[in-house]
Length: 420
Image 1 (cartoon, rainbow, N blue to C red):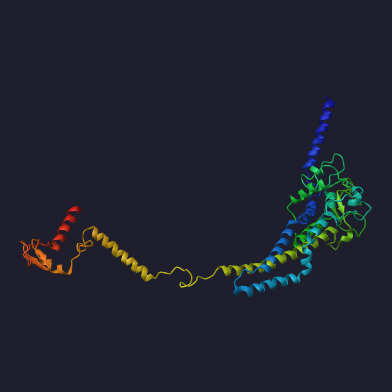
Image 2 (cartoon, one colour):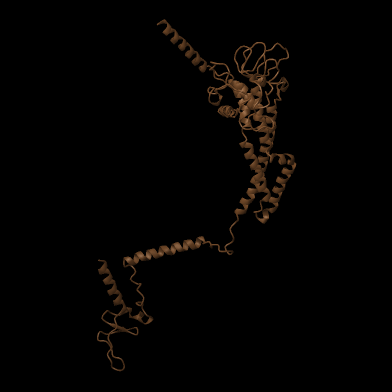
């Protein structure tokens, strides 16, 4: 029973120990962020490429524009000369930026000069990252990738489960110790992704580089050797009090670290090779951004000329097919006539206008004097006739002519009866 309890106790202690280490703050966390700032800046090749295309597209559009009115030609020519002058004054930069000089510098910073991928290195981890007897590692500072491996690769020690650099950096392609002579591309992709997740560094510019350098210098450590001239040249964890051996172990005198050449850190001024490449790219990027801003302002002025051309004033009414305007007096007169017509229609519907007749019923001039005739009398040639009628000179009896007034009265009466 005691033996069984002993085995369970040992297993319990080991499990608790591993869990405790896993919950500890990852070692090299600040150093990881410091290096990742530069890695993220170097990995942002999309921004310079996009700005470069915008610059070329903008200047081409300015110099080839011709679609403005004749009255604006002189203004357009002045803007085109301004763009051409700017390009001539920056010719040396203009010729090299098209060759991807910025991206070349960024690639050199990541992988080392004239390399495009992770370089395999000969030898073990400690001489590459920084051996005890050396001032610096043989590959330290030459590329950001190798420095990241020195800082964050899993320890070769057995039963060392402590996280390094970030909460889950010890896993994936980084779950086994780093052997420099083996292909490190998968490890690099894994750790580069973890760098991206820090969201540190910003967009490539001189300002971003300088801020990252300031943070980087604060994280450097003194190698803790006995020499008085020792400087802060070590990036990463150290566990010694005499000298540091950056071999990935965490026992006394060792560490997971990078040891830089003291000559690259004189008076707080960085001249580490990958930093020099990044600073060069940032300077060119600043100039490219300035070119984009200047040319964009010129193009906006060109586009204003185009908009002015579109806003052509309307032609006078006697030119072209312009629609004639209607005066206020005519409109008011039409409104008055419309009102009279409407009132008249209303009155007719009520039988108020009995003087107006349908076509063919109006009185002739001869009928004017017949208005005074009695209903039973006729009317001929403006004279009233008796009920018995009259005979003409030939003795022929004529039928009596009905009075027009009687016709009107009869019509009005019928109309009234219909309304009733």
